[in-house]
Image (cartoon, rainbow, N blue to C red; front, side, top):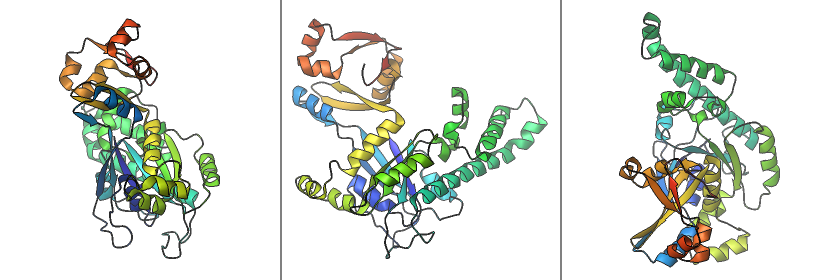
Length: 349
């Protein structure tokens, strides 16, 4: 899973990146606006840890999340195309919204208003997508009008609908599209087509429940969007401690879970992702798929050759395996099943 981190300047975007990855990327005014911060984080999973204890493999391979942190967006200006290119190939956007007060850090709009900033960025994303669609239409319009059977005709008609939808100030996440149509515009990587996880960057000790409640009111009816609150400065400091030191500081600060774990959990839920596991003497590994992916496609995550030659798979639910302890006992108890190509792999299957 790859997530692009974006936000207004002075929102604490790179601070959040550091909190999620444990890195120490430069923050503030001195940061290079052309530099992209990238970090890969292992997805913690107690189920995979337990399987490793049982199978004692040569290695354990957790699923991973890759974060791409790009330069801050200028307030009330079109999103820089160079910036868009840096986050094009991502599965979702993590939008950092400033919710902390600081006399030392000037807000681009002159005051802190998290809901206003959220709505401002959503509007900028809409305008950016509209500009991309209009640019493409202008390039193929002459061909389509001179030849109604041109291969570009389907794309042209679809982009006309896309623009009409965006002009109504509606994100493309909410546009009804057939699978063929999704494939047709996939290469544009429109921002408003991506799921959005909003991270409100709060100050130490700030109460976030009221802010999250106002966000839910402002985003009512929006699809594939969610929000959490994170105290970026505190979380960044904790992330850079050793694993042995972190629990003590978390207890002192009243943190039940680290921001990196909360963001990963929220991202999986937002995208509808789950993990399935393969286990044996060589390795125990977690694989990330969308909930309900058919078995043949799930097998393709392991290797394309397995997908092409897939006939059926032996499947056992994690809870059943843990309860019985071995594959042999699962088979004896009828918990080990053979499933075919179109079997949907779900969290409860």
